Amino acid sequence: MLARRIVSMWGRTPSVLPGRRMFSVGTGRRPVLPDDGLDLKHFVKQSGSQDVSSSSVTFDPLPSPFLSPLASSADGRKFFVETYGCQMNFSDSEIINSVLKGAGYEMADGAENADVILLNTCAIRDNAEQKVWGRLRELKAHIKKSKSKQTVGVLGCMAERLKEKLLEAEGLCHLVVGPDAYRDLPRLLSRVEDGHDAINVLLSMDETYADVAPVRTADNTVSAYVSIMRGCNNMCSYCIVPFTRGRERSRDVASIIREVKDLSERGYKEVILLGQNVNSFNDIGTAPSGKWSEGRTGLAEGFRNISSVREEGVRFAELLHHVALVDPSVRVRFTSPHPKDFPDDVLHVVAHHDNICKSLHMPAQSGSSQVLERMRRGYSREAYMGLIERVREVVKGCAISSDFITGFCGETEEDHLQTLSLMRLVRFDMAYMFAYSMRERTHANRTLTDDVPDDVKGRRLREMTELFYSDVKDKNRQEIGKRHIVLVEGNSRRSEEDFVGRTDSNKKVVFPKRKVAAENATGAGSGTVDFGVGDYVEVEITESVGTLIGIS
Image (tube, rainbow, N blue to C red; front, side, top):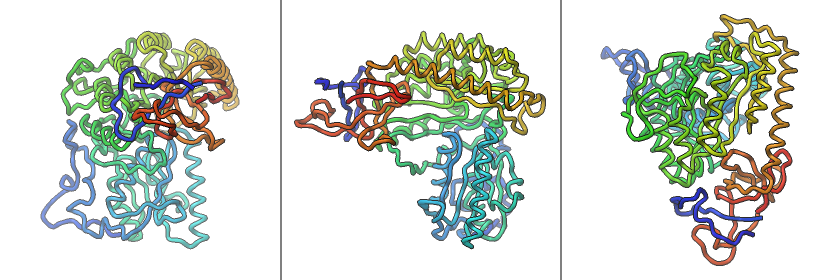
């Protein structure tokens, strides 16, 4: 056992709050409208922190003075949210929880005990939507058999994409709500109670839910998502997100810092900044200041924007700097970024702060410049490789993950080989790989042909995954004998005798539970103490069996 006390997990003494420890271990009705001539603008508000068009609207925080008490009364009804898809959807479900609890609804512990069942959905690929269709049919059969009066709603990206089609499909749901209309849920549910189907899929130019405190229900009290921006302006030809999430808009910096401070005070040890294009953050309502921000767009070298970008405001590098300063003992991660928004400013902030994790997600999508051009990614293979070299120069030892789409429109065998070549050169630590799925309303759907046969897509995907896992297996073997600071997340799924946690580089590690000398814990005393969930532990990697195994 390592007989020394760790003062700092990153080389400087962290500001550890009381109760925190760090260890070193070794080997319903409709709204009533008033009769005073008020129109729509009196029922909605604009964010005070954003300079936006007056035609863009969002709903007032509930309860609104213009709604009758009955319009937002839940009468003790219970709701349950099932979440599908990305981290952003899980974060949005916490906003939904807050809105409904604020309107008097109670949270159920399962769909079977709920009066209202809400499916927060994903539309990025057809497979994601098919899961939701299957669940809707399952719920319909259950409701019919049990003769219950449960309300079923479809929320999120699938709701935004299909709109009224969901209400028309086999009577599978009663409520359809897009990702910018969650404040309207109590009113819409009241309409359903009155015997009507209800829908609101209005996209907003300024809705960020900055004033809504998320209600977190996950058992995980170690790591928390913090949404910092919504929407996407990139308009990649394969992607449905700009059509389901709308244009980019960012929260004000002050509200983000308040939320991170609150999480720190509540004992969370990791915050994950979220956005559809998280590193294009731009708070245009706050003046930039300091060494990390010059109020400029700041693209990585060799990259370009597909759409115009406002240059004023606090951008991601400065925000990331201030978030890291909130509590040096809290790890900071962010997802999902676009490679173009990694200028040197961002890389230097990551390198400068020890508590910003040295693990960056850089979605390449393809290794072929021709395919990247058809995808409208705004960069070439050469520009992407130049960025990778710059990351490794500035952020020493940084782990890099990526996304890849195989079988995109017009992809040739040579294009595919170019992607395999890029994967061999970079040797990613993690990758998410998918066969292309054409989505309606996208640029590709309007202008390109999905001409790669399914069997070819499948074969190319297998070749990509086999190459990736071969590289990862080799890289994990190289971890044996190295020591990492691991944040304990919980029990291992395979054994309650083991903990599981993640390294700074986002690698999962399983290691046995054991007591350590109290002198090795912050707030030292005599005897031994247990370390547990939420503690930092120094672990030596002893073997690699897919997951890294360590000793404590």
